[in-house]
Image (cartoon, rainbow, N blue to C red):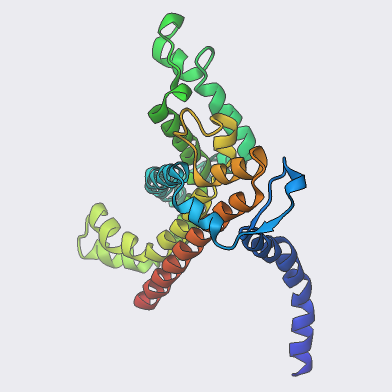
Length: 293
């Protein structure tokens, strides 16, 4: 090993330690705990090794199956909308006009707001007594006011709207970075050939943006699987488990019911799903970049 390589390893060591302590260790400990049965509220029962029993229970758990279904519906409802809104914002921010800096700063505000604050804001907006939504729909006619967070479908839609508002700017940032890598010469050559704006968008912008789209899809899918704060603040998983996503179900099992092993099994399943999707996206991203060369 050369002196340069030893110096490089020493410089990487602090970062590797932080990743190992705050990233790798919790994952490994969750996997270990998922093979045990330990109930916080019954400490005298001790911790018993049960092997794959928690996973077998999870497989036959109808609430877990519903939580997985809610999670998938949430992902399907939010991620395409985030990418479409993010693409619109990115196209607007990529144009040269007066006040573009202000627009870029304004677009980033939802993403910069802490998720708990954002969740509380949207909870107020959908409130049945003083919410902005009811005021816009019914004005002063308070007898007609609606309770969207108390109905299963509208409650999930409300959480999805809050998620899209909060995270679309992040997708826009990634897509904007992709837009700025497209050479102007391609658009100039297309203009000489008489291409319309739609033809330029379809045959130049979209194909060249494919790697950025996949990257945004990767980040947003992993974040969507881990959604917790919005559900915790806005609905607490209700009504009737309509917004009980897998992450929140694992939280309830672990901290509300004290089933450490079972809650850890849920967390491991969420991690495995995120890992599988991430590997699939990374493979597609590698193929897209290879095709673009």
